[in-house]
Image 1 (tube, rainbow, N blue to C red):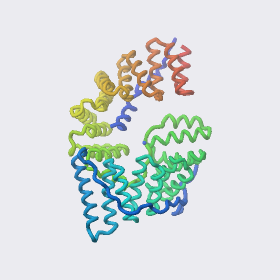
Image 2 (cartoon, one colour):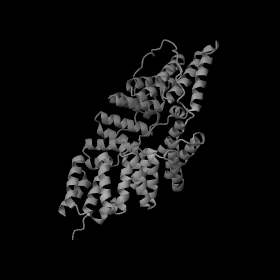
Image 3 (cartoon, helix red, strand yellow):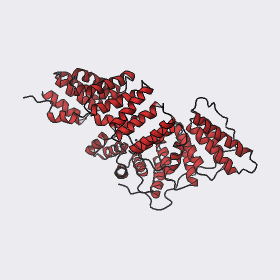
Image 4 (spheres, rainbow, N blue to C red):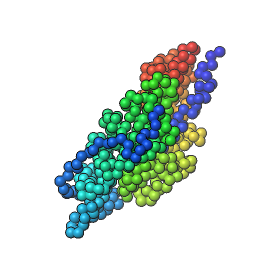
Length: 462
């Protein structure tokens, strides 16, 4: 008797998307030893003298498009620079600090050209203060200028050689520039500061992999993953390292678990920077950092504080709903998602969030309506397409489910599970030949995929 698809297969696939979708919401609303044990570590390159001939004027931009609290902050900082410049007894360091504080607000408000001038003034006037070259490095990194970013991280480290965050960022810039030996030196120095730094171990692993030392890379990366198991991006690098070593089963296992999440070092200077602006964006950044660390109650408190100042900010209210959902407060989450839609009826992520919660509570008809609203507002919204397809499947609307899974695959062919579930649906609809053709097409996208190969064998066996 033909029992395909097997009961075990369908049982495994019944919860295809809810767990993944829930994670997607939270993110929508990252051999060798520990390194040198000595205090000095490998030498880093000397950045050379700072090219600066004196303070340059920083003209004030048009502030009319900014939130009133941010306008006030910028005016305060410009006034502080003027006061320091006009004060006959003001020291170079005091004027440098005034320029630096102005540069940070300009940088946070996305006036990067003016921010660079102000921060260069700060570094030139207060040459012994580490934070000004450090912030300049981040400014250039945000612009995508890795060479200048690396130069300023090195300048910061010349002033504070054991700053863990600067060492990790320098290593990452060197990796991105295709200089694995220089990157390895920075990460080794970071590990001399903190041998248990997941960020430094991950960087050392990537540098070893780039240098084609896969065995050493595995050692570093496995230790990083043990310290930071939520950093799912490490699985990709581990998969590549195991593949290079010929450990194909281990490679497949890690690649199947690849995802977001990069381990980060403690970074008090950037934490202070991210909290600078008295605006919804500042609260959103701080809250999302708490979300990334899975401190959902803390994130919700931050988002509530932001909404106390900007109650009509739809993005911030959606973030609060997401934090509440991840903290297990489904009713509170729905309340915030509904409030988001009252402020912004076209906010598709709020429809999606309600769809997820409805589906988790077995209210599939409501979930379908919400997912459909989300994809109507944003047709290429992959997570909403998958949620709609799964809700249709669970309610027996197989023809519609098959169409939605096909559309999801058109948006992102990399999601192998969507290929598999659609094949199961086609068989359930009696379209076995089409299911076989579909799986052969899937294997062109995912060659050698064991689950797809196994499914195709079952289909062809009848």
